Image (cartoon, rainbow, N blue to C red; front, side, top):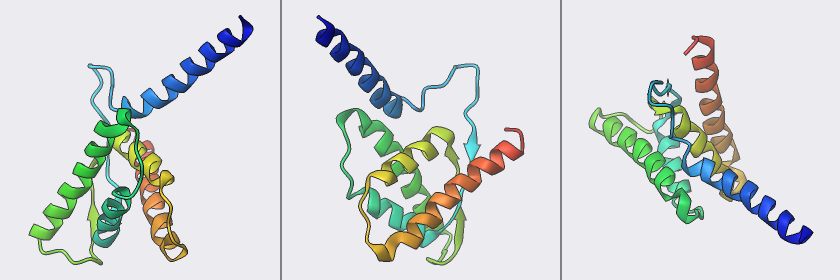
Length: 138
């Protein structure tokens, strides 16, 4: 009986943690979502989309994955229409849950040593956007 109870508790903890990833966009109805604005080189945004295409996701993460990919792809499309180059810095408007999901998804991937600087720059840009929003009282 003790083993069953421990398995049940572990299952609840596990399901709670995986569901929170996929449900990160759920917010109280009265509260407007916080919009963060990470600044990234266009090439980094393109690289992030490519990188995300190579990671494994679970079924309950599909919506979060597609949401993050769409935000990044839309930013690429807008920058391309505006004739931006790969080295131009682009401001991407993302909700807090999208930033969190992007960071979590990127943590899953495997990268080459030559990609470490780019990976770190992307993660730093995400962190800086969160710090900027906290500093402005949003």
